[in-house]
Amino acid sequence: MSGGLAVSVCYIFDTSIFERTWNMRGGFIRGLFDIDRRDFLKFCSATAAMMGLSEAYAPKIAEAVTTAAPRTPVVWLTLSCDSGCTEMFIKAKRPSAAELILDVLSVEFNDTIMAAAGEQAEENLKNAVDKGGFILVIEGAMPTKPGYGTIAGKDMLDIVKEVAPKALAVVAIGSCATNTGIPGAAPNPSGLISVTDALKPLGIANVNLPGCPADPKLLVGVVLNYLLFKKLPDLDELGRPKMFYAKTIHEQCERRSHFEAGRFVEAFGTPEMEKGYCLYKMGCKGPQTHGPCPTIRYNDNASWCILAGAPCIGCLDMKWPDAQSPFYGRLAGVSIPGFGGVQSTADKVGKVLGAATAIGIGAHAAATAAKGGKKGGGE
Ligand code: SF4
Ligand code: SF4
Image (cartoon, helix red, strand yellow):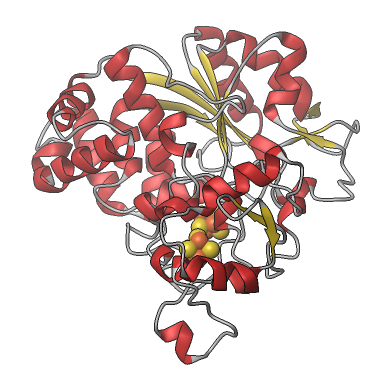
């Protein structure tokens, strides 16, 4: 990592990280993992679970991280977005993904947080790209209308086309990069396209990590998979790592038993909210959204949307946000296998599932989608 980046990231956000990073880079005083070893090992166990690996992989992950040398260079481009994924990356808590990335990766360029600006920043980018052998992380979408998104006078799309062919791998992080997200919502005035659509004409495939913002733990998981198995993780047809995006939120939700028993919240601020009943009727998009939110959680693993009492608005879905709007509108038309493929309203779902505890709506959604009966989008 460049000294400039270390100073700018850590001075602004976490002086303790700065101290540890500086000390490591200087090669004296103490090493990063001596300080929080217990937390670090806990992180390795949690990461193994997140990656769908057994507990036995935790020591291997620890070894992969601590012996990774030289660190893999990363060029992180921030395009049309609000930089939320970078914000989440630098504010992750200890044992932070940021610390791990700072130790496993060498972030050569991130235009949002690096100290360099103007011509010096452009020179840093050129030098990093010229050296090659880097992972390209792209945050944000690309305008297709000339002049709607430029950096140093160059259209964002042209920058990506120039840099991506020289990368070892390309990772699109966050919904803006994976599916244009909020900036690309209808009517999409800039004509934004996703990283996948931008790279398709070049014959370059990329890893997609949707989320608004995407948790940096997912990026860490992709990198650790690379370190452990010397390859990128298995991807689904939308370019998402199967280890993170195979299951729906609903399949993993702690309110699932309430859904199955037909116990729903009917209005915010009611006793049903306090009892933690299912938020399906409040517009929860968990049944059609794939992702690991219930297991990875947010804010230092403290909580996640549904646990905090907010219905999932589907921000990890590859058609978000248009297909999930209105956010508090009820997900319509759910087919219930085993009940004659009935198209049920949420009211019927509650009654029917009160007697059908073993049926999952993940299967319903799939069955409905297969019949073309699902309204409101989703994958
Ligand atoms: S509908 Fe939403 S709140 Fe209810 S169980 Fe499914 S994911 Fe959880
Ligand atoms: S629970 Fe839903 S709204 Fe919350 S982060 Fe996950 S996908 Fe997004």
